[in-house]
Image (spheres, rainbow, N blue to C red):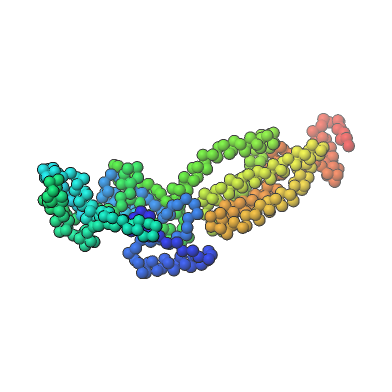
Amino acid sequence: LPNDFFAQAVVVTKGLKPRERVKARLEQALASDFPSVVGRIYPLELGPPVGWPLQYRVSGVEPDEVRAIAFKLAEVLGSAPGARNVNYNWMEPSRTVRIQVDQDQARLLGLSSQDLALSLNSVVSGITATQMRSGIYLVDVLVRASAEQRMSLATIRTLQVPLPSGRTVPLSQIASVAYGQEYPIVWRRDRRSTVTVQADTAPGMQAATVVQELAPKLTALNASLPSGYHVELGGTVEESKKAQTSVAAVLPLMLILTLTVLMIQLQSFSRLFLVLSVAPLGLLGVVAALLLSDKPLGFVALLGVLALTGMIARNSVILIDQVEKEKAQGRNTWDAVVEASAHRFRPILLTASAAILGMIPIAPTIFWGPMAYAIMGGLAVATLLTLVFLPALYVTWFQIKRPLSGEDEPLARARLVQASEDVGAPGEGLQADD
């Protein structure tokens, strides 16, 4: 914890529902019994520590100017319906004792700054006089002034500072003692004074939604700031962007390896295009599943979408490979597509069902729930559409026509004869062979 002004407690409950009940009661007690205390009741974070979901950092040179800008930013953040409990990470200025030493007078008396610091330290912080044994431990015995004397200017002014000659002199003869004010904590970022304006989100609201609503106002505020001062985004949205950036950095390598493996397996750019064209079908199920389950499309859900792409491509490769096997056995292309779809219908459906059912145990969890719902919904919809869409796309892409059946042959021959008579020369006839 940063200092003694901060406190933290962990409450362990027996389940998710009891946790929500305890959370609501603690929030009510904190608001009614301790209205002046800045507090937050939140579940333990399973990912990287973020803190308050909504965070904006104000950085600049002068701490007072930074604090004034933070006040303006707090008004903007407090106007958002999705934000609540707006606060700062800087405390109010506290009272301090300032001692201004007359260096010329101190040098005349033969005193150095180190001598003065040692004398003051003996009164305020104390010095170790001896040690006492407590069991197997040695405990230091400190000698210092009482609490009232340490905060009394009269006591500090009359402090006798020893001189090299053996005499003593009151501190008031070589220094001025007065009360002052300073910030207990001054946070810095990139060596600049920084105040973080932070807030919690209202129930049912996502931090990204609130940030998007406030974006125009914050852009205008940033444009009006003096040179050397700026406001930058932090909190959940910043950490999410960092995670997405780390995934996007290896995404090109993943695509290259995936395309290489598919090309080795399919050995055709046309068939490779067919496999890749089916992958977006899973997004329909992903969106529907997340909306129905009220789960956010965050970093964990995006991991599920990436895994889903491989699952859909696997089903497509299995179906196309079966078509090629049927053609190798002497079937015409139309019959090969029909037979492959019927032959691989149950295996593809069963493997997809097994993968969907395997996600059920982690679906209720808070952290992995969005990924599970994304995979379940996307795979269910994509599997059904793959078994219908991919054969139709295969037939359309390769311009395969349905062969004539036995019932259609007489009608086709009659149409062929009629067409031949219409375009043939007078007196000439065309023969239609069986």
